Image (tube, rainbow, N blue to C red; front, side, top):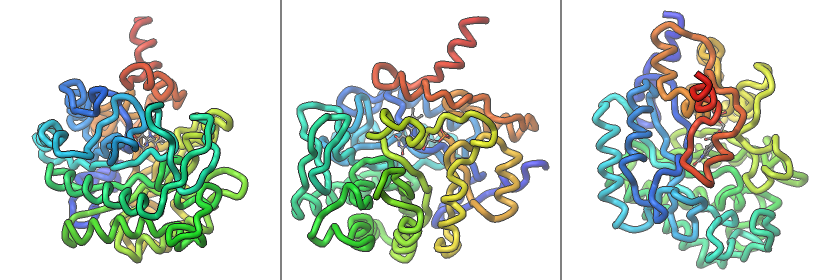
Length: 374
Ligand SMILES: Cc1cc2nc3c(=O)[nH]c(=O)nc-3n(C[C@H](O)[C@H](O)[C@H](O)COP(=O)(O)O)c2cc1C
């Protein structure tokens, strides 16, 4: 078979995944305003599960009311969310060979809800909220860690196969890692080791609660694309710390949500102009690979062509491939590729899906327009 490696099983921790295709976390804006799971949410994911993806990472799930970034985002900071979430995870497991990950997140300074003040490691200007964010006290940072641990434990209880910590895109944890956003002088700020401490503490406390067999991995910013910001050299050292701590895999990302508007190309959902722009985080994957101790590294960002993915796998440069926008257009893309139609994803990477999502549910605008023309 032409895509022999792409459709061979792989593992994150001890969880077996039927192929190397992952749905990267995507906010689908189908929870209720309060973050409860709806039938529409379940239906959206059922299509993905039927479409052949081996591992689905949920859109970000808030660990705290003050960490709920966006409208209609799922939440899991108290037990009232458990029944709906259980129904959701059960529905995915009905397609028994599909595994599901809970991505858990805290928005930090990018909170959309104006009832809450933006918070962060240091009082840095937030250009979405147009104000300085409030610096968390050391005790509040410990509470954030506790929130991640409690939410991770709920995800485990619900039946999620894996937990992913959201450490990217300008949300709270990536602010801690960033030398621009973290100017703290306590145990959670300073050199890169201290800036990574929050990620180490979350992992260690979760590991204590969940035992050694439950996989925990991270989506990690590896560049801020800002003057004085996180650069790949330092990200590599941080990745080493995380792998030495025990994280089971890393999905490298880059960029910040709050600089998206001023510097469009820096947001992780980059608009691809040509096939040369595909796999745009490949240099980051290559840089981190040597510190991975044979644990999987996931190539995300502009993955569009299965033949290229197959080649990258054969060369042992990446272990899995994660996609977001292509699977909004074609939830059955992995099945299409597996059936022998290996033409690239139809997604044109226009980012309109991201643009509509604040006001409506997430959908592929380009596909809808094409369908309306028919
Ligand atoms: C509509 C939309 C929602 C997203 N939601 C999330 C999210 O909840 N968590 C996250 O880590 N990344 C999120 N992302 C970023 C994607 O996971 C991914 O990193 C980015 O889109 C690049 O991958 P792609 O080229 O395959 O789209 C989102 C992207 C889009 C387009």
